[in-house]
Length: 247
Ligand SMILES: Nc1ncnc2c1ncn2[C@@H]1O[C@H](COP(=O)(O)OP(=O)(O)O)[C@@H](O)[C@H]1O
Ligand SMILES: [Mg+2]
Image (cartoon, rainbow, N blue to C red; front, side):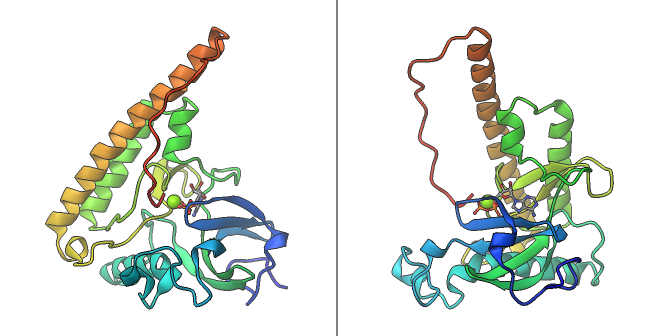
């Protein structure tokens, strides 16, 4: 099976040859030693019925023809819209670039650019950085740069949150946040892709939400480290249940 470069993808990939590096909400995400530049994303099998439709969704969503591949289609759509605007030039995109598809035992696998640090390690999400107490002012600058760029370049961020953007300096040496999931229009009437103004408003709402999340997650990290420093284990941590949303 020739798996030594991302442009010679085999038809079928044996997931046992790789390592699952993330996912859980919607996707399983795999890394393969022989495909160093990319990751393979499959949709969680338990989300689909035997025809590939959403198992638990409401009746309307359940009958959408794209079924469980709807999220992939949204991302690909946004990628193509961006490429059309950029006259087909790939350049430096603010999101992980899709490469194509492979077949797996979990159904179709979307092959995407792996966002890694300079040593090839998977880049941390915004939430990882905050929760481990590593979030610093220059990260905030990078986050604002990403969001400003998405506004300026009219990139639609349907489902983007702190778990769907990762921080790296491994793309071209520049520190940056990159969108790895949740790209594309979610609204039934595509106001964000049609209107730069409404897209800008959405980006601002996401910015406010992420700033609040950064505070919340950083406080949690501080709480953990203070407790560790004082070797006090809180007897009972009362946490608000996280809202169940597509991550
Ligand atoms: N292109 C990518 N580059 C680096 N890491 C990624 C990439 N895609 C996914 N990941 C990692 O896998 C995790 C889950 O991926 P994601 O696409 O958000 O799936 P889900 O929303 O189902 O959890 C991410 O939080 C991130 O850590
Ligand atoms: Mg996600």
